[in-house]
Every structure is written in C-alpha cells, then in structure tokens.
Length: 108
Image (cartoon, rainbow, N blue to C red; front, side, top):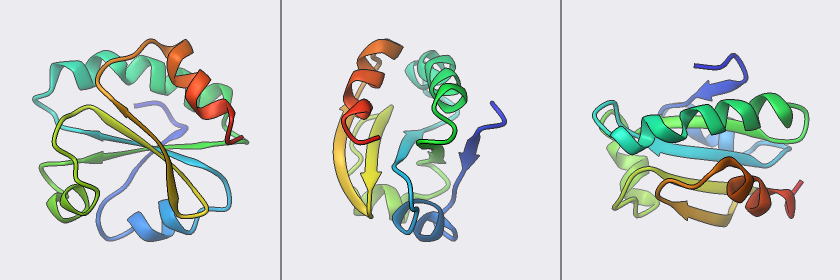
C-alpha cells in the first residue's frame, strides 16, 4: 500500500475521516475483491499526487462491518468522498483514475 494511503478502522474512522480538515476519499474494500485490487494503483497515484489536498483512506468491509453498514455499503469497491464530515461523492465500481480525479477535484 502506498505510504500516502491511510488504513482506517471503526476505532479511528471518526478522527481520520469525519473530523479531517481536508477532504477524505474512503475506499471500502475487501481482500477477496478482485475489482478492489484493480483500482488500488489509481488510489495510490491519487494519494501521491494530491497528498497535501486530500487524504485517501481504505477500510476493510469484512473487518469493519458497523461502518460499512452505517454508510449502506452494498457493493465494493465503493469510494465515498467526505468533506467536513459529509459525503459529497459516491463512486461504486471500477473507474479509471481520470474519472475518479474528475469527481474529487470539485472539492479540493
């Protein structure tokens, strides 16, 4: 995992994501999910390119079922963009990096 991607759990989700002073792109994923692995490189690139403007976080849905349920995660990968503690964008499925960047740039 890229050094600029943060792994979050239910224990630190609020502090890392909800209370963040910059937007946070959260990747809901699982180890067994092939498409989740397909978008990882794009997320690593985004985390590196926008490291001072956005935080990229990943949360394993199998290990963090309460958060996954709270946000209605029914399909993975799901990316949620949080700004000021609120969901601003939802991206479900595999999208190329430029499409993900297009969605997040509005909130930087």
